[in-house]
Length: 597
Image (cartoon, rainbow, N blue to C red; front, side, top):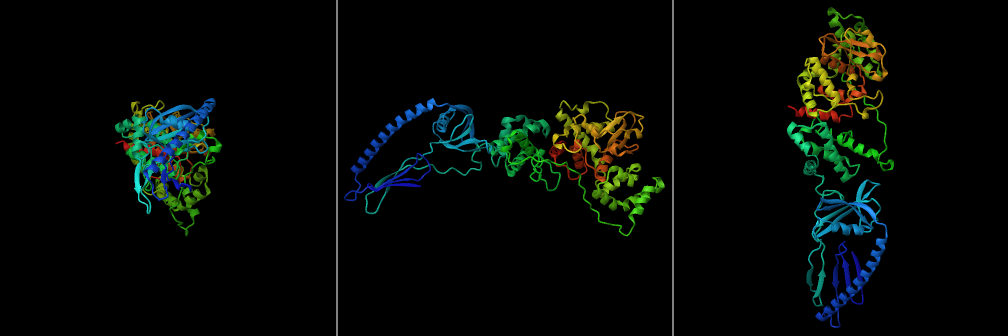
């Protein structure tokens, strides 16, 4: 509060509100008898009126000179958005000299009622990628961006005449021009338009989607889920609004709030795959800072100058399969090497099966510690335990010891539950690269399984984010070849191990001698770089996928980089924790399958 005192006339002037048009006047005048007469008041009013008119005349002349000089200056082209009570009225280009002209032009904008006042005046700051507060003295530069927020009303209360009795004096007239009552506390930020996606945000998100992407709501109501194309549109609309309000680096709370609002608006997009999950983590996971919202923000920040970045880029390492030993050290009183030798030398025959299984069981703990701590190659593991090659069902036993009760989940779920729903999702997507599998001819068990694998590699394609060790350029159509390949009927098993191609990776995959659509076929698991081939006998393609997945876990192998998302989806079928960081698309696919009845 500022105070000016004129001692000669006992004249007090108080400015009690931070508003250029709001002032509190209090006059105290005393005569010889200490009485303030009506004549004195009229005289003072007349003097004040003349002084005001004189000041106004001089001010008008000065304004004319100032206006003339401004016209000679070069006009700046700026972009301004005009809001009334939080609703955007227009966005247009102005050619002006200063901020005061912009405020005047904005107030006279079509669509604004006569009685409005400026609530917020914001200018875009490129250093912080944010709109910050400005005033009429703010400098204007070419191509600057502004936001003007007006509110309805005059902003001034009525003039109130108050008579105050003072001890020893006559009643004095007090002219009081009051400021408007304080605005209610707002939950949005200083530069956030009301009606946009504010802190509660749920209703605002619905309005935003209805106005900018109504087809998302229509598809969700019809199919119970949304396609990948519309999910990308949903994220783009919501994140663009978030960046407009919070900048390119919104807080984790902002991103969590947006993710929760998305799955609340579309409940069937929520999916809980672990006990501690709440169902929105595929849109934003605060623990790993991943999800569709985070990926979109990172893509938007790609074109930012290095000086504008808040964080430096860092190299990322490829995720690995992590194993946790659940068995304690056992059999310390026995010579483990004897059981290893027994299992290695004993030939697989019906009469020896029980002894071989017992030997593999006795050596399990030793084998797990060796594999997880020493990281031997697949060739070294199978050289030490060759029964895995001619008795592949031993992989089932080791996997069941690692994850008790989960060894048969894939065989139970894949054909009866997962494949039919994958086909429905494929029909929903219907992209140019993905032919609707239900329209093709052969529907044998192996062919349906192969079609489902094709759908998986299209819905969970290899991405640039997986680049690293073992990465080679891979199209969506060729991704299936990292999982399984085909050779002509009659091809010898030994020839499959000749001339390994480093560009195809070093991880084991399925080889089909023949084709799933043919009358006869044989499946093998082949690791060319290790010269290993595991024949699977008469087992079908579903059993071959089951054995391949278990081999990765039993032998502690990394997934092929091109198929990390596909193997993450298989982890979900086995009810294992998803081990790969980039899992948003996997969880999205899971939510679609859960939404399909």
